[in-house]
Image (cartoon, rainbow, N blue to C red; front, side, top):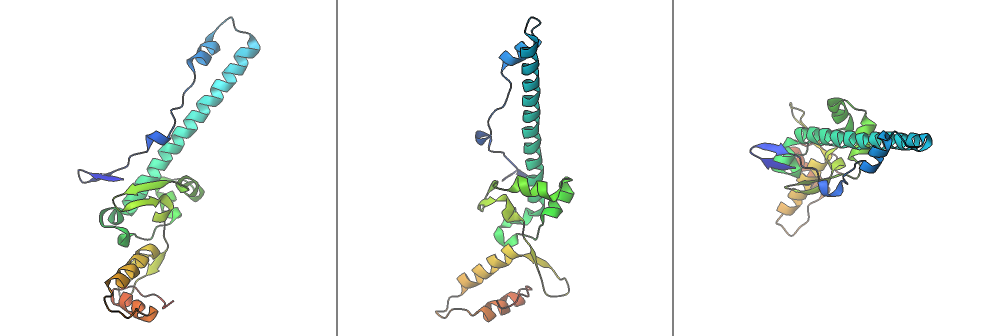
Length: 182
């Protein structure tokens, strides 16, 4: 995922996707009038199966692109500002938006990776439960975003003394994130 001219562009890694096609020899054999009936039938069935398989692969890639585009839209702040800005997102959110079943989103996002300005992440990384925020807005943070906030709090701690869990929870609460001490 790259930012180009103010818009996010998704580029598939075509090097890993083999070019699929049907050998012209079999296309010709299918058309021949003087071929044996059994051979012609066999070739015709297998060419039909191959075309179905190729269409299925293309459909899968289109669905993967739709899902990735939708994830990028939901997680726009992450792609612009970094992991701390990951928002809660469920498989159902994406499934509803793309008009597929949750299991389809799960299967397609499994073992797929996205290269971003912030590193390489498994596509499933962008699906995160929420942690309720404090205050009247009741803003919600993703678990991953809160973990990033905790990491920053620990890194910013310049004293020799380590922060207690309670102290970290107190600092987060001041930032509007109410979590249990452990």
